[in-house]
View 1: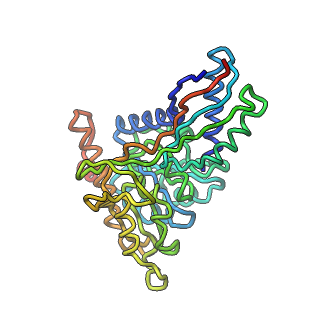
View 2: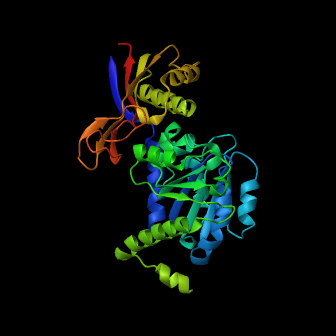
Length: 236
Length: 114
């Protein structure tokens, strides 16, 4: 005898992610989920650009790591509030871990929540953390062939950061190959080529994030939610 | 890639279903797995067999129905199947698509002894 079930095995996780998304929308918090290989420069990009974001926005970072406080220490050294999420072996942040972390935070006091995922090009891309945008980080030393090798991340991403362009002279990296491969996966995906070390190329990335924040805040203020505009906040 | 945790939640879900119906003897379990889930059927079966050990499901068979990835082009609205890694529409030559199927992960049915 056959019993028809039709149960989605990811339903519980999707429900939690939808809950997080709704809570972030209510409090007008923009959440970014940074995903990339170990050593691609996720933390370095935050070190280079968080000081600019904190001039305009109240920022909190959720640092995902299998073990150690190393990345979290680097964020705290910037004076930016940081919550460390040690996964204890798991290769990506799970929605359950994120929900627990958010319970400790006062979302009302946060404008921008940056989630730095565990260094990994595969598993984090399959997890919906309720974020507004997944940001794929790729760096020149990893090679120009990675986009089609890890297509899911680039399909899920809302933009790509191409880090370590200061090494372009010494590495055989073909940027056109990355652009062409991205076009096969997702048309028109913004790519920010930058160097977290020299600071070159960081401004377009900063502008993109601030634009997303304005969009999120604007769409909600139009619905009558109280809130200061970004311009007002910049004056404060 | 996430076969371990998925096999575990699958076994838990099947146990809940059969226990709520009066502890029926399970012959096989059918799942539907989309091509975008990054799930490798053989690895899922391996972990399923591990997790059913010493449970009422021991000896049951897992069937994985792997579904292709189908997308709809936002520009011409045509549907097409994704082969390999390219999401480029064969008509418009642009990868601007919405996934219509291929991300499912479903416990579809359970075959039990009469």
